[in-house]
Length: 271
Image 1: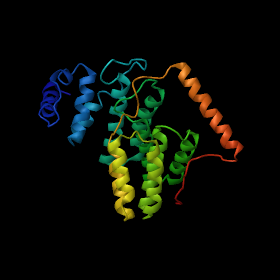
Image 2: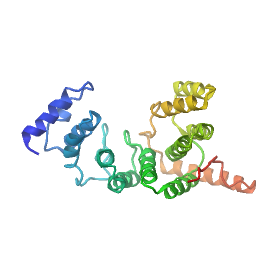
Image 3: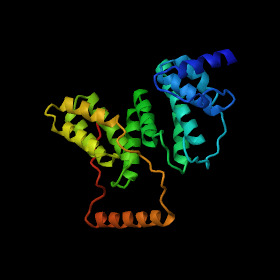
Image 4: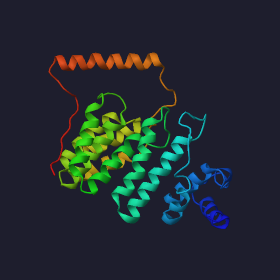
């Protein structure tokens, strides 16, 4: 990429309605600047420019232990870039395997990174992989992967996999016109969503909607709103983790003693 071309991209991003401090985007030699410019170009729907800039970040080596006091970590920067590259490939060429190549790399970073992510959503990236597999004719594989991941989870607290898994299933039922079952999955999924008082009011409005299809649209809208962060910066201590694991173990024993295998309400559409 020539410097003049880079400068045009920087000027385009700098003049966008979402203000970004110039120091965050001006230095081509800083790959973090290229990461921000490339992702902003994608938001601005400059697909060609986004692809060109993000491609310069694709092979950057990162420190998976790095976690800054503020802003995004190197791992999160690269994860978001790979995610957007995957989406660009899918939008531009409808090539699921090529898109999955990038999405699966992004998800691998999510799984390996041990610190909180502020913008990247592990569950959303996982569910997007399922979407791409489903769209490319691998429906049963995607559904089984969804079910397996959800069954691994403890049905309590905030949980991205239980929310996005239920959202994925809700969308499949909606595609078949079964909005009652779609909404049932959203109701279940939102039990694991980080909600504020505003979120609970929005969900009550969706639940009160008498028309199932309109209710589905309202649940979908709620799913686009970030009422609270998915991941907190105050990571638990080792003792807290062990206490939580022991608590979950005791609850699992209680469910097994009652003959319950899971508390999850999962319906799988047939394809």
